[in-house]
Image 1: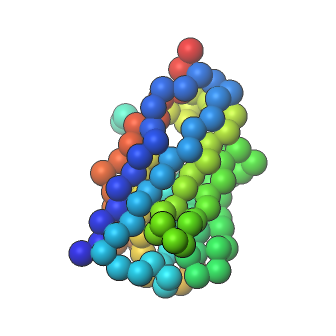
Image 2 (image 1 turned 180 degrees about the vertical axis):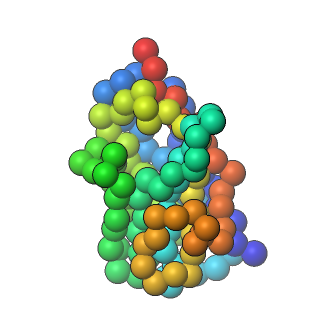
Amino acid sequence: QVQLVESGGGLVQPGGSLRLSCAASGRSFSSYVMGWFRQAPGKEREFVTGIKWSDGSRYYADSVKGRFTISRDNAKNTVYLQMNSLKPEDTAVYFCAATRATVVHATARWYDYWGQGTQVTVSS
């Protein structure tokens, strides 16, 4: 049974930074793609970024390019989302997800496993 647990969310001022973590357990994720999605109240869940575990290839939504960075730690089976230059519009619940797909997909339905989400609030 695959489990994904997000952590690291919180309240931060505009322009600040946060690092989210997604701890994965239950399987080796060497053949998986890991993604981050976010969902604000009343809005659709949207793709933020994803990484192919095996080779580290990455893909970012245009809205976060240059500000967010996804990375992985093989020893810890953990994927990270470093968020810099945060904006109020980044406020959302952030979800970690995983899929056996061979490329990063930007649509939530491609992902089979999901974490519980962690709240990120960007506000003065």
